[in-house]
Length: 306
Ligand SMILES: CC(=O)N[C@@H]([C@@H](O)[C@H](O)[C@H](O)CO)[C@@H](O)CC(=O)C(=O)O
Image (cartoon, rainbow, N blue to C red):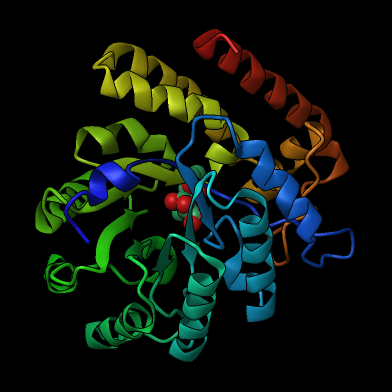
């Protein structure tokens, strides 16, 4: 399975937001509209139900609804990676099997959270998911939220299996990212997680990126990736700096997801508010978000001509 894994799956993946109706229930039609919005933007695929997708705030039935809507809308047009991690191994396995039944391309998971688990427990948790389907598996390392840092020794052990094809590295250390790439080897995918460090992550060996802020500016990350591949590093650095100015503003709202969802609504893509305890933006934020949306559109126009 691993022979051409990098060329098959490398690229830009939007960590997709979930879409709810006004009462806060998953709205499949809104999910479909959001997924459709991303087709044709040059991305490789979508990462569904991850941090940005609030999978961890949804029950299993809701997570299935979101994935089903995505698959009904864009199956075959975009590569779909599904975050199936839940606190219990049992539910994670249930979601893994559902992802396979839906025709998703890859499954991925964080460790179980809340309990401070030893490495052997996290390994067992992931292994049950890996064994439950024939799909490739991507380890999701996000130590700042889970409290668990993937060690290179555990990675080396897991990566011996054909089905374990990569790591989504959302930790901030590009040194660790490089170590994961070296440990996994040539035919092992490493995705950059921190959007602010996309270019740095690529330089240190990442094969692409998976990010939440891509959802409001996919064109800029696709362009940044192209600039890197074509070795236009100075121009790439200029663009990353502009992107970071935008991200810094997005991070200044009550929640990042609330801000991004509001920006999408300004483009006619309604996704509802983020789910509590993630806070929505308030009416007093609307004017500055409209201004930020204009800034994104101008940056896209400047750098892509679109
Ligand atoms: C810690 C965190 O949430 N990191 C995000 C970034 O996209 C992040 O939102 C961005 O870099 C802004 O800080 C992603 O790595 C997470 C992600 O891809 C996901 O939604 O699963």
